[in-house]
Amino acid sequence: MKFFVDTAEIDAIAELNDLGMVDGVTTNPSLILKSGRDILEVTKEICAMVDGPVSAEVVATDAETMLEEGKKLAGIAENIAVKVPLTWAGLKTCKALSEQGTMVNVTLCFSANQALLAAKAGATFISPFIGRLDDLNLDGMDLIQDIRTIYDNYGFSTEILAASIRSVNHMKDAALIGADVATAPPGVIKQMANHVLTDKGLDQFVQDAAKAGIKIL
Image (tube, rainbow, N blue to C red):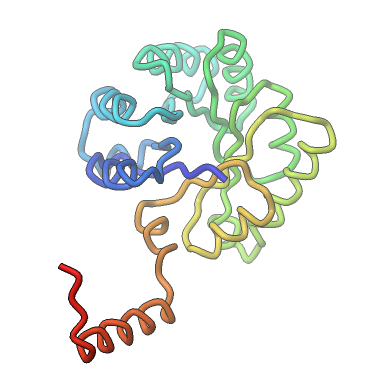
């Protein structure tokens, strides 16, 4: 499973990228706002840092303006994936951009039917939102499983990009189901390394090394 980092914070991306933990980056207007940076400026900087796809989202809601915004965003770098919402206008924009050879990430997906439409429209990525479904007492992973089954049934090339990930369990479950990509905040990716038994075992090793007088350097 590929790891995309869901942030527009340059330092956080750089830290994970140096460890080989970044296969791409996803941003959205909320993350751009949080970064305090200009969308074109920060997106260009991210694209230069990472080799994989960098999702940059349009802000218009009508197809004609979305398409123009998408073209401008795609001009930032070759690894831009233009992010459009899963609306009828977004699907029209997805179709037009994908036919021009631009990667498209269709976002705000909450049903298998929506995901099917996105694949038919030529989406490079479909972004089902796990956490927001969980907020409604629905199991977001059920949606990932449904999309996986449908895409496998018909050989769609659209990659399932599990989004709105909030926990390490979300990461594990997405990987078990077979999501192609998971995009998560830097903190969640780093938390995947944590386990109480690892900490306990390391503490014991450190104590025993001190008692034995073990020195390597």
